[in-house]
Length: 173
Length: 444
Image 1 (cartoon, chains in turn yellow, brown):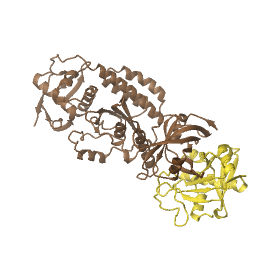
Image 2: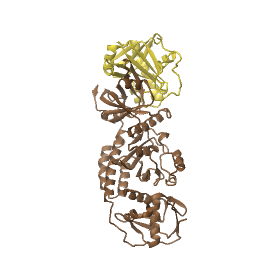
Image 3: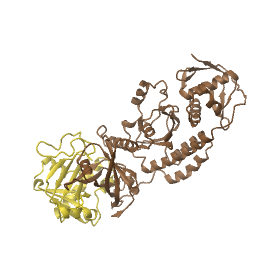
Image 4: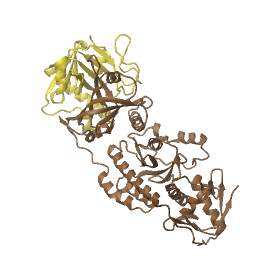
């Protein structure tokens, strides 16, 4: 499936990203991602993670390909969850490097604009000097609205829009 | 990545930065969701706020495994918790603690009115690990809490009476704990309310102000016998005009002190109320607030709870010793001159007015009227606590520490309201009525 332009725009913006997998015992694994990139209008998504922070997640994805990712706009909390079942670990390529740097910059800038101190705004997205990134690539199978509030978890598709309401803000646990 | 004690990670559980929770359904499809509050319960348990039914909740009911990613609000460290869902609590102290915390977080996020706690989901913590260590240094603590406790506890133990204990407590909160805005309220279980006996850091002391259990941060802490902490002040928990208006309209209004407003910072950023407990019996509340958001964390809560426990032990000891044998046999009289002071008493609520200005009502009002009446009858100015306990017209609640607390309140209230009428201590279990003008008593 390809992604709605609104979803593509959200993914390209200042978003906090997290990635989850699960093992054979159905125990979940989760990690922070440091940026993402979409290919072919969203037919493929690539998210960038640090190998040393994601050993269990990478093992789980290698084992079964199940993946869930959430992209949450740091200003508005507008969020989507995108899931796939064919995730695989691929090299972190040159285009990923550029996108990772751009993502870190725009997200930190947004946090600065929100009033976060500079050290924190940059700290959340900073990485070690010799960061060992890998990319998780998958084809979106389902997209869900994840903006906190009533309607969180609704599958996006025909008839369901991401912008259900700008007031939909509450903890969508 | 290294294993670590959950307790060492508590700063990341303040809700300042949202966390992520990953779960998995019975078909093996993972889910990840942003959550606003992971709450520290004890070294082996956390609670997560359940605000409405979601995929996360459906998943943990089907498969109890969950993994949470936490971020430290100051150092950018990241931690991961491996959890197993145990149960959901729908009421009680933990639920109320989380509800108040969530209200503060919601206010901070601009989501007041949308965050509502339906339940506290309790999880066992199977493991905690550091995903990435501190990138930034921790800010220095506001006060060295262990040192503050070490300095303060012996002083509380050394207090000879409730007055001394209250003074030590307030002095320590200001100088050792660096908390300039505090109140001490005592519980009147017989009448199901709290009354302010001392405060510092406010333009008006509010001594005598009353609160009903369940109202505001203090009232909820009192009702639930649990600390209530708000990291970002929220209207939901402020003891504001609406509550006072409701009080005035309540059937209990005649018995409640509604004339003396409870003090409060106009720009309160964070608040904490901890109960002073003797077992399950509520003796009082220590309350502190700050213009700074996020001023009170888990460590401050721990320190104030230790302080409150020590204060409770001291109060219990005083109550055991309060059965003194001192009687008022001293017939000392006072030297009064000038225009008579007009003191009016309304028996319906024991309210007392001096020269048409409201002073106090309730038990403290009854004590004042008793003393003045006794003085008018016999000229006596020295009294003992014991005779007050035995005086039927005062209708003291059952617990003896209440008398001392009421006397502190009355003494402080008189000091604030009257230049010519004062209560001074005159040795253990005794006090002296000081009058610089004659008194004319009027009872309509």
